[in-house]
Image (cartoon, rainbow, N blue to C red; front, top):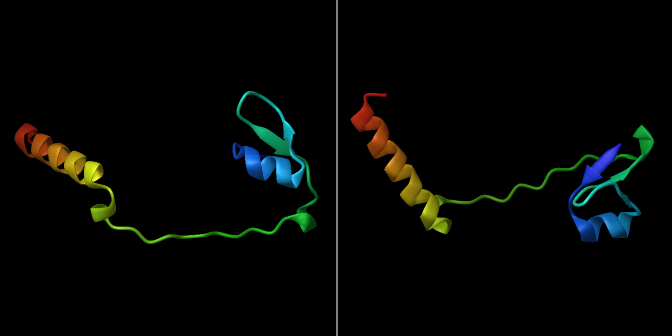
Length: 65
């Protein structure tokens, strides 16, 4: 059983809607191709996360953790 919340992909691949956000499809194991796409990133691309990390670090150092 394959599941996705990606509506465009689900429609293109013939998945059935199983609830408000989820689409599912039963397939045979030999029909499955597993692939992974990785995209490198830095914290400079996410300035809000950099700020949150600083706040968490400051809180941790003050609380003794």
